[in-house]
Length: 385
Ligand SMILES: Cc1ncc(COP(=O)(O)O)c(C=O)c1O
Image (cartoon, rainbow, N blue to C red; front, top):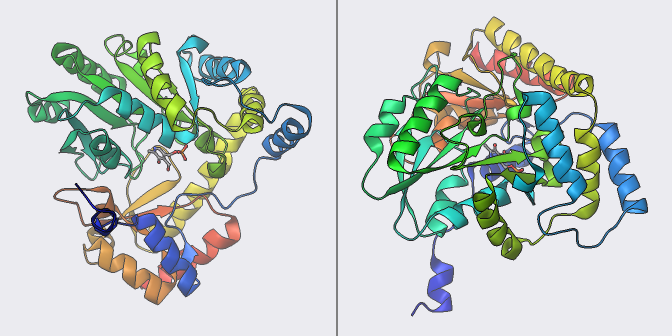
């Protein structure tokens, strides 16, 4: 039996985001590390939340989410992605993080092996191990960060039960195309694997590449839990309204976990997100355009200053190739120097790896106002020169 003291002695790592943000605060640095926007909140959403607080309910909503929000999510996907989704397949959760937790708790049995693709979002591995599973990693290949389905196939073992994918990808901003998802679909069907597809960045594809959802691939439709997030669609990360979408038996398994994780998600924010999703396509295009402009500005400034910025389709991040920028290919050391010498915080991409990390890349968040981006670009240019 483990005593309380032994339990509390288990090391608990703080995430790189917390570490870098704390350093940024201590040193008064511009924080291009953690992924949260520093741009004005969408006024339509704030007004909708205020109205919902004053005029709608502040009591428990239905466990799977307000019917109006689930219908709104389905209508949004129909409009933006041409996808017909039955609202019955949707479970509203407290952020995508809870949707990921509910999906993995539902799908992973003790000793099951799950394949993760690194670099990857830091919640996946702890959630798989919390559910009793073990992790096997496959790596994306820089500089284009392509995922080779043959590498996924080679990683399958007798205990492999599922795969977690992320498209568009945080940290590197690339998307999986239909052909790759179809090859993964064939693999999942042949080996009876489930897929958790984290698509939280689907609304932040900034170069016009169409988003291909795993749910659009016939071989994946019955075996995939797709994860979405209003925090990313509306740049309101603190709202923590997310969802899982899956075929009815899978959705029921996710809902069964959700009911004992949080049970429900803030009612007024669900109303506000439903209103936001119903805003016309032009509104969503203009919202994305604001971020596309910030990204173009930072990429152009960095390129002019001699940095090599890697191509990416979406998210709020750009990645710098350090060696190609004439800097040492040691992302942790360069990140520390950037804080000390330039007062700019960035995230080393190696932090998104568990094994054999790529050490030559830094992630910068461009979702900042013009003044802050201007100053950051100026400091980064001086640092390099
Ligand atoms: C890939 C990915 N998945 C999930 C999340 C968590 O989303 P939420 O804030 O809705 O829980 C994030 C947040 O940055 C993310 O980048």
